[in-house]
Length: 234
Image (tube, rainbow, N blue to C red; front, side, top):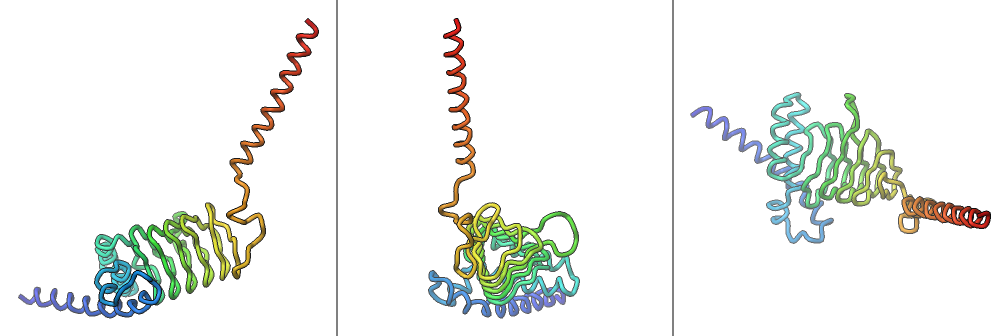
């Protein structure tokens, strides 16, 4: 009977903190999601809210070195939400995870205030070294669906990562990154050189095919000329 009371007490405390952390994030989402109808719907049905609230509890246990409990909470949260946030990750206030399925945030990742992550985003590490190996997102950073940010570098404040981009190096503040590997195409809403224009940039594959086509044409003409000279001598 005592064990049952202890379990129920622990569960009650967990739910209280879950409720507090979830409520703290509702107002941020109301102002940023045009599909949000009311706070009750967000609190009950948004998996991103649940994942972040669970993470804050797991992160507390991680900081006091109860790693098993922290990881257990994060894995249970992953099972129910489809969002995996390592309990060691540092998450700022106002994180908005839209849709969320498939998001992975690594152990040493740092996410600033008021960031937005869409589905299938990965904040991952590179290599097997210990220490800082995941990215740091500044404040007000938006990471589009399917984007991968890999490595221990910083994405500056107010920057945007386009959908399906693969970011492997530092991103300045107020920038827009696109492509694989990602390149900065705008800083302070100004284009960064004509060679980085994602709309008008030449296709390198097409360029190589054109070079091959021209070379084949040249070789064909040489062969035809040699055949003509051979026929004349005969």
